[in-house]
Amino acid sequence: MRISIIGLEDERFSRPLRLIANLFFEESQILTANAEEADIQIKFTLQVNKHVSVFAELKDNNGKVYVSEYQKEMVSSDSEKEWFKQLKNAVAHAYLTVLQDFSGITQKWGILTGVRPTKLLHRKIQEGVPLAAAHQQLKEDYLITDEKIKLMQQIVDRQLSVVPDLYSLQKEVSIYIGIPFCPTKCAYCTFPAYAINGRQGSVDSFLGGLHYEMKKIGAWLKEKGVRITTVYYGGGTPTSITANEMDMLYEEMYDSFPDVENIREITVEAGRPDTITPEKLEVLKKWNIDRISINPQSYTQETLKAIGRHHTVTETVEKYHLARSMGMNNINMDLIIGLPGEGVPEFTHSLAETEKLMPESLTVHTLSFKRASEMTKNKEKYKVAGRDEAEKMMELAEVWTEGHGYVPYYLYRQKNILGNLENVGYSLPNQESIYNIMIMEEQQTIIGLGCGAASKFIDPITGKITHFANPKDPKSYNDGFAAYTEEKLKILDELFSEKGSPA
Image (cartoon, rainbow, N blue to C red; front, side, top):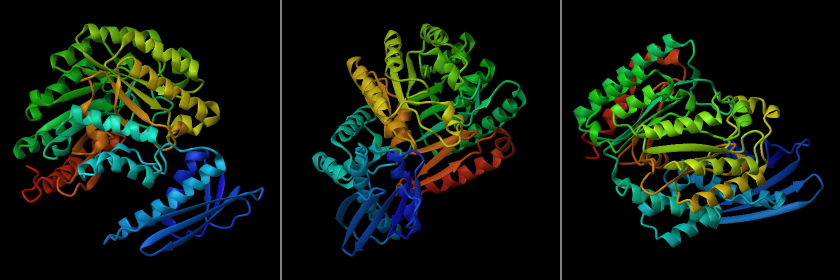
């Protein structure tokens, strides 16, 4: 869909206009002129003083006209960035409304295109806004529907039940450890994940760098008396490395990190069933790690083959039972809505197979067309469900989880997500992942170690977030891990100095 935009000269509008257009149309194109080749034209008229008034008029190629108007009081701000944010949201409000009228599609998340909608509700709670008023503000300011606000509230309630001190954990940190290897790369994936076969040299070099990072960061945490809330081993697939390599890695964690016995939760993704062996499960058990992920994604064999996962459905089930028999008592499983060739019947089958296993938690992802993935580059090869069918599958997941005692406890969204839906983590009571809550709600610093690991340093006073990412490819990581570690230590020194200490 080619959309001609008239009346908005500021280039900062371009990205939000495109993101909202993408909620309605695949591969939309924003043309900032009165272009003849446009499919529709939207003309904006803005008036800004103490109030902002936005009028949007949409004309299609048949001459049909749709209009929308939005007014809101401008809150005075010393920050030009904050002032423009208010203006941008007002434009988005009118823009979304006129596109909804034109397309007949209601966007249940309103003008939101960001990853973490529940953060908005947490912020209002922390500001002391009564819940009824908070809900009304979310509805008016962002056009979020009652259905999604109810889901947000349910998740926030669950999070505060699981982590009652969620708003006061700034003096602690969590740790993310990235292992960038997998048996094969899935077609939808853009995580740092390199096929491990034939790469033992890269693996050895990488692990040397990772051990170095763990030693240095651990020493700093001990010196400063900073506790660790959670540790999460992700990737890639952390169980792609050998049992012996895993053993040495967890030994390093116990040697380097402070007070490991009292870390609230340690998770290891074992997402690819073809990486799970009795030897590796013994290692996990040895180091008191019992929360893992075993991810089927689908219980249809043809789908697994199409997306590049080389394990079988039978292997998923067998490895689940093996892990359970060897003491893994908090297992997460992932399913993906909208995989190629899958619709309601296939997803219904996946839920029925999940019922036979009843993992402690189930994360239901909606397929996202990530820009660099194989699936996005070859869309014509991967036929996926439409918006209506994707919504039906999400509704099936909601009904199934509620009927089987699972409660939603975290949520996030992605760009180009099928049907403008969401990813939701469900769990049985008291089996929620604390790390998932911490990474989504951004209430504390999370230090990323390893290849492709992203750190989020959160100022304990202002809440300002500083991002720092290690390189995604093993060679670049191996060449510079010492320098990246020093950079992180500098940031930590600034955040946890006496002046800014949250203790």
